[in-house]
Image (tube, rainbow, N blue to C red; front, top):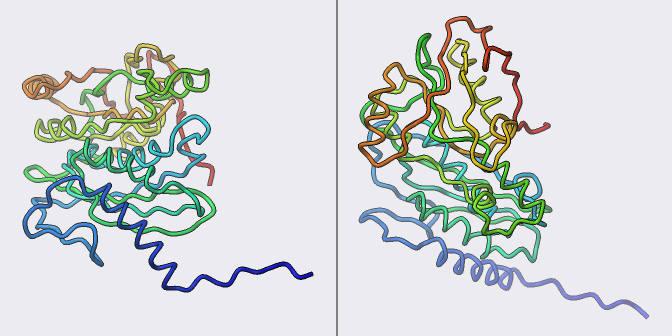
Length: 317
């Protein structure tokens, strides 16, 4: 007796199924008014109004099982983190988000609507509309997000502008995300404050804009941890640094604050910290915290007079 073999699905039926999915996703991500003259989801390409000043473009990829533990967190969180982490790259340069495109690859049966609800939530919070994207079948769930933004006035703040004598500041205490992951693994609820910091990171968009307009010399977001990202900024600027301390968030450990990553706070370098704080406070933003000073000698990498080793998140490629 021969096993029955299902006839191949006609291409038209496959197309209808894909179109149905795309239609439902479009309804999820299109939660906002589209500016006159722009075209977002639904055509071969998005059409955007001209950008003001410098145009910024950045891409981030989030993979289930690498950037998010599927046994501890809902799929929505992967979509949220994918867009939020990409937008944070714009914030790190003082940019304002204009639009994003999201390409999702996933095995058959993946709840794509749940995933896109997370993307849509992040788009709403960051004011960065999803204007297009793509779907593909794959072995693993992955979300690739490309964001576009603009930097008028002074232009983008780079990593490479730090100068000897500049002050180093951060936009908040560190370690909340790593502490949240630790707490979730220990059984804390998804609604736990620190767990939320891990699953729903908040890019510091307004802080980045304020720092740019205050004349910051260099800036970077702390996606991989201060213990590696500050070294990257110093490398790009060909300088050293000396830290007086690392501000540790309530509930986090000193090591989580240094190497935990995914805080998405900004590290800012400026020669006028008083002006920087004034502009932050004037806009209702939390005043940044001074943590150290830039040194001319590239070999000087100290914290509390001890060597500040590179440590933080790095992919093993």
